[in-house]
Length: 430
Image (cartoon, rainbow, N blue to C red; front, side):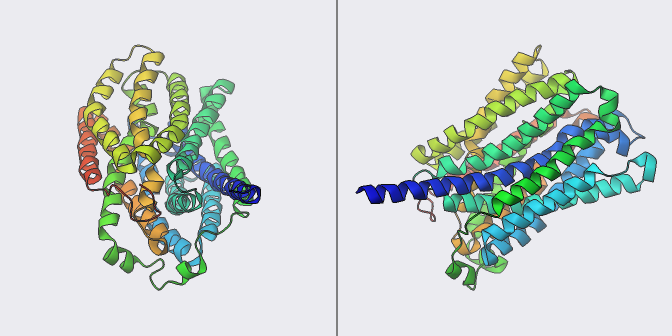
């Protein structure tokens, strides 16, 4: 290869990396906005559900967290169709603007003491707006990042979707930790919980600027294809791929939310840690989890996505219940943190390739729709309900049932993973 060719390749790689960073920045902001609700709910729940004990308040707040997930299939369908028919760039821009609106609404929302029952209703409406936005964000971002990544390194570069997804969680947790150490619990419950939502809305506007510079990856011919963004074509021509994504997203989302967002509540309600200590533990664990993603993504480029999924599903199948039992008896923050980190190592075999393994199963004309809708449906039913189901099991004295439920779903992931092709039919990746 001559010098000019090498320069061209380097320039092309630089442009691709820049596009991945730009797409990832918006992804980080949207997930920050979505997750800050989960981390702040322990403070604002009494303001919106005052006539209840703490577990019931958290259950009500978790129910609204789940309501956001119920809007994801609608967002997944609409934004996926938009991305396939009109381009990925426009869908990514509109999704981040919609998330901005939802966060700003929560930031200024009056409490139950001011407007009564309208407060939880409007909170639910804001969560639905956020869920709608995120339903389109995940699939479109996964599609865009898979298409802009270099062949042979798609696992590595696509893993940055979860780097920024977890980064959004981490940033949300870190902001809460800073506020906890800067203000008293009374101030946090009174008004300080609103600050992260304001920050999220402002960050969304900054992400918009980055996304305006993105180059389109779906060509004119793909967008003009008669099947582009067609739900009937997706289900008629690619039912196996659609069902596969449903299957491994169901278990993958459930175990992901179990060991991330729900784990803060578990450490407080079940393991007996103080709220601030639980936040500190999760902040460290999420940082380590985030750093694992590129490593596991690069590993998938070598051993194949199917092997990653088999390791993930078998690990979850045999380790979930023992890990939770050990966490119940954890005596120190270090012990709890090590156990959660070990669980997240297993989860990272899935999260690092979550986007690329879905995108590789669909052709370009229905790729965004296939990824978005299948992911959103499974995530709404299994991921969004994780906290609510777990807290219901705690409330009725059958906490262990939830962890066996997670284990059973990991068995489903294993069966689906066995049927995954050794070489993906699209994008030319193993």
